[in-house]
Length: 239
Image (cartoon, rainbow, N blue to C red; front, side):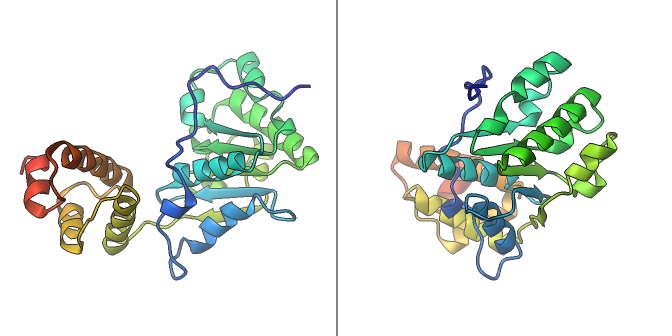
């Protein structure tokens, strides 16, 4: 069987998703999880890893795929929330997952969204078996511990607990501020401590929303040729 072609879903990798711009530190509770994900590309590493909880799961999954692609490996990133409704019939799901065992890496993002859907549960069970037999590394992400998912197919529930299970912990406000500053630095922006603290205290503290706000501030800064100060942030936020 040939290697599967690109999916007709407009699914692509975000090139900005990199390990270097995912905030963690040697002392962070998330350091082990991040390193475990990166190790999937190493020989003799765990074949299956499940990353669950916290925020940034999709970022890390895509970062792994980007790094693998840059090494010339063939990968498939599947955001299950996006493809679940596109492929609902058994034949469509089987077609979507066909041939993935011939790749070098597979990432299934947000596996919790298919819990309780018999067609998907059966298809993923068979995919697990094919990947295991072929020795293909697999990264799974889930909003919650895979042991607690409402999976109806007992065999799939056991497969989801193979390999290493790593929890991503939520960041503290201080860590979110540092993460925001590091992302700003990548963009060539100067984000002073007091400005980062101001943003964290006055907007939704979900990291994805904070990064979207940073995008907005970046565009406004370029447009108006102004630095990121508290008065300028107030202006952009309409406060």
